[in-house]
Structure formats: C-alpha cells, structure tokens
Length: 296
Image 1 (cartoon, rainbow, N blue to C red):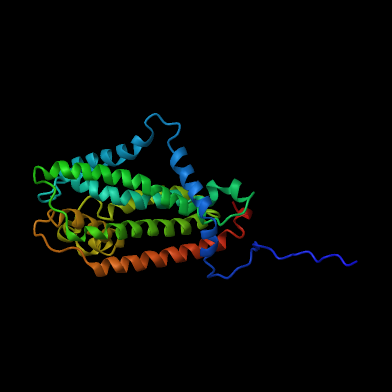
Image 2: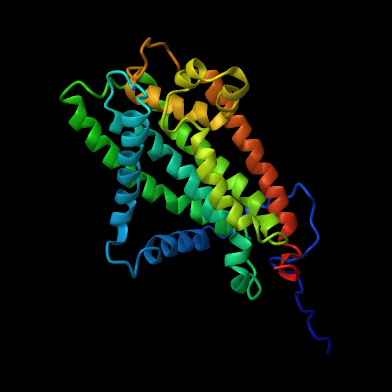
C-alpha cells in the first residue's frame, strides 16, 4: 500500500539571498503585531525605573527653551517680532526633537539588539520602525505642552496667529520621522564596522541643531552673516521644514517684515527627499542585516 505523499510546501522561506531592491514591505506587514509589541515595550520600559518617569518628556524641551531664550534672545539679542521668545524656541525644539530622537535611537539598532538578532528571525527593520512610532507619543505630549503655552501667550497677543497651512502639520511630522529613520538606518549599518560613529552621532546632532534654524529665523542668518557662511543654513532642508512649521503656527509674526514663508512646493520637495533617504537607508539596512552578526 502506497504511503500518502507529505506536503513539503513551506509557508515562509528565510534566505540570506535577496534582491538589492527587495524592500520586504509585505513581510513587515505580516509582522505588524510584533511592531506594536516593540512600540509598547519602548514606551513602557524607557522611564520605568526613573523617579519622574514621563515628566522627562516635558522637562527637556522646557529647560532647553529657557536656556535658548536666555542665550540667543537675551544675550545675542535675536528678535522674534511680536512672538514671545520662549514660545518661538519651544516651537522649533518640539519639532526638532522628534527628528533628533528618531535619528539618535535608530543609529545603533544593530549594536543594541545584537543578542536578539542572533537568536530569532524577524524583519530587522521592525526595530527602527518601532522607535520612530513610539517617539510619536513623546512628540504628542510635547505638542500638547506647546499648545498650552501658545494659548497662554495668545491671551496677551504674544503668539501671532495660526495660519491656514496648519493642516500640513502631519506632513511636517512625517517628513521629520522619515528623515530620522532613513539616516538612522544608514548610520546603524555603518556602526556595525565603525563603533566610533556612535559617539560622533551624539555630538553631530547637537552641532546640526545649530545650523537647522531651531532657535533663530532663517532671515536673521541671511541678514547678519556673510553668504559663504549663511548658505549652510539656507541649503539645509531641515531648516526650511522647521521654518515652515513656525510659519504655520505664528503666521510670520516673528519676522520684522512678515512675508509668506510657507511654500507647498518646498514641502513636497522635502517629502520626496525624505522618501528617497528612507529607501536608500532601507536598502543599506537590509543588505547589512545579512552578515552583520559577523562584525558586531
């Protein structure tokens, strides 16, 4: 009597060989439950054993805004028009922090997760994606704080007025998150071979903040600095994203000569650039994950 043939058709096949442009979006979707699990882990465990807990989400931007107000608006005498200087700085720091946190936390993905990566398979890009998504909670809390201060200062006419372009806020947040994720994956792939990059990223983010118009309007740079220096800020895409966000919430009230400093074309261009950076980072990340365990 013949035995029935066994069904050897596999549901999934794990292979180290894949096309360079295989982005594995379908596989990421299949592991969406794991993504949500890592997001929950990031939120719950980050400040679990701290005294102040999630209050650090509030303390960091508020203290930074106070210091920037004292130094740049008090000592350096940078004008913010009719907008309160503290509120002006808080707007820039709030949107910048999301990019910085995404970049900083994803830049050493392979190094921090080498133990779990070496034991079980799942799409490695789930890790940096979970960081980017979990940071949205932190951003949401900081935006609520910004709104509270905005309402307070608007009572004394020191907050300008909200522009109709405020509806583009989700696009601005998406751009910052996508850029941070893309650059973070590129750096994370390089960290597997060059550990010094971890320290360089911490230092580089601080320097990059000063050329991203976080604590001053771009017009001030164009007015006070020579062209061979100001171009660094003028051609910095993040500076224009942050400037666009400030125009959305203040309608140019921080300028001495208010103009429409919001360009939909620039936002769409930045969206395209961020998407290209993300895809480039994903290609390098997927390529590195094949043999990173030999170098980490």
